[in-house]
Amino acid sequence: LVTIMQYALGCFDLYLMEDDAKYKDTFLRLSDFILRNQEDGGKWDARASIGSSQDNSSCMAQGQGCSIMLRAHGLTGDLRYLQAAERAVAFMLLPCDQGGTAVYTGEDITLEKYPPQGGRASSVLNGWIFALFGLYDYLLATGSAVQYRRLWEQSCRTLESHLSQYDRAYWSDYDLLGTIASPAYHSVHIALLKALADLSGSKVMFAYAERFERYRRSRVRRLRAVAVKLAQKLTRPSDSFFVQ
Image (cartoon, rainbow, N blue to C red; front, side, top):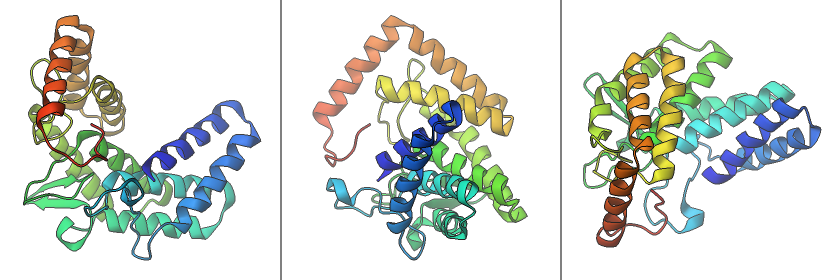
């Protein structure tokens, strides 16, 4: 489902760039499909269709789904989309132990792409940032309660404070469990951190984006990262649906 959501967002971007109605029509058809697949409580089942046996809640699905619903509402004025976005955000911010995708630890808030396993939160970097984008879209579109803005700012600050844990000093990690990022995900991390730094004004995020960019430009560091990634793939058991 997340792949469909990403395709829908791509169609919306193409519609804005090219002003071609075919992209708008495709986006709205996909929006209807995504709306129909939202559960009553606001959740989108992110991975059951590709064989996951685990809890299939995902902050990334919630954030991207929210962004899609808000864009569909903006194009059509249909309140069903706005209500779906509300449900998506409310579910995303529920604690993981209540079925949601957030982990609250003191003043820290992490948003989880995969539910914690054995009491350990993985805090996948790309999923966390995509979720923050969705919450930010909701704040922009609705001028919603101060509480949601406070939660967005808290989670951004939490991400800042954790960024050193994603840094191997030669490459970035995919999560906080020590999974090294693939070259593709490392590039995604750079782009996402730059975008979030623009939205939040975070100099820390921008500095890490620049640092990760320097790692990417180094052939030696790239080769080292690929070797470590291959070793992890060969030695670490994981669900087949994980693409890291």
